[in-house]
Amino acid sequence: MERTILRLNEDRSRAIEMVSQAPDGHVVEIRKPSRSLEQNALYWAAVHEVAESVWLDGKQFTPQVWHRYFKERFLPGRVIEMPFGLVTEAEPSTTELTVDEFSHFIDQVIYFKDQHL
Image 1 (spheres, rainbow, N blue to C red):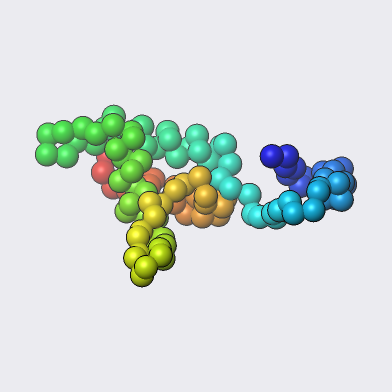
Image 2 (image 1 turned 120 degrees about the vertical axis):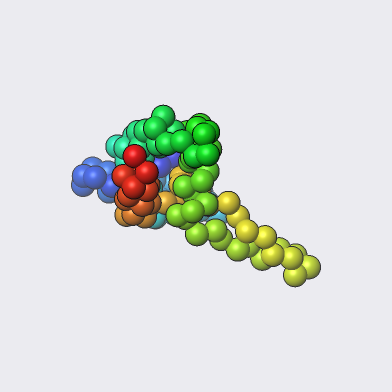
């Protein structure tokens, strides 16, 4: 999959070229950017700090367990309608968050961290 991020006029020109050369039937998607690498680093630093410092009932938990906890606590699940009237809830994913959404998520995690350290 070829993609381009619009930062400069040259990027816009490249995007226009990509669209004009795309074969019929291809999908072109324009969306807000997802979380940044800097945000991701900040988030995982906070998660690791919680994992290293927070004890609950005499136990410590791994960063991966805290990550799952934070997703379930601070990100809304999405309900997916299935065939035959079945409904299921999709696990929240931080990879699908926009920069603004991930920023809000990080704020909640850092507030949690500050309250428990």
